[in-house]
Structures are given as C-alpha cells and as structure tokens.
Image (cartoon, rainbow, N blue to C red; front, side, top):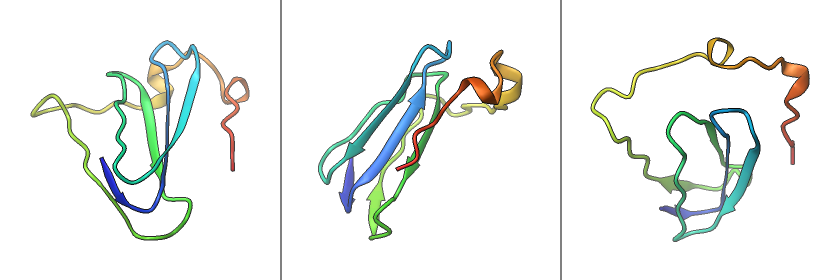
Length: 80
C-alpha cells in the first residue's frame, strides 16, 4: 500500500510471457508474482511511501542475464 503521490510499478512474468505495468494511487497496492523481475518508480518526484514484503527470511538474489533466454532487443520497455 502506498501513501503520498502516485507510483508506477511493473514486472515481467517469470517465463518472459508479458510485461505488466500499473500506476498505483494512494491507498492502493500490488502483488509481484514470485520469480518476476519487477520495479517501482516515483515518476512525479513528489514524496511517496510504500511498504514491500517478502515471503521468506532469505529471498535470495538472481541476475537477469542468467535467468532469461531472450536478448535485450526482444524486450521493449515503455518509457513514459
């Protein structure tokens, strides 16, 4: 859940199937599927607060290059 300004969020599904984006308004929240590459961006540059929770004491880490079999030219991320 966020408070303050708006927050742009997005993720790529684990299998690279589709890119999902959304703009969250104050009082809204989102869930990122386990294994997805995700981001949060404050595009308004106004103060915003959000809470992130993980389902494990040790969520681990991964690098995108090792997990994906597609090249950078195959993924087109929208820039607003």
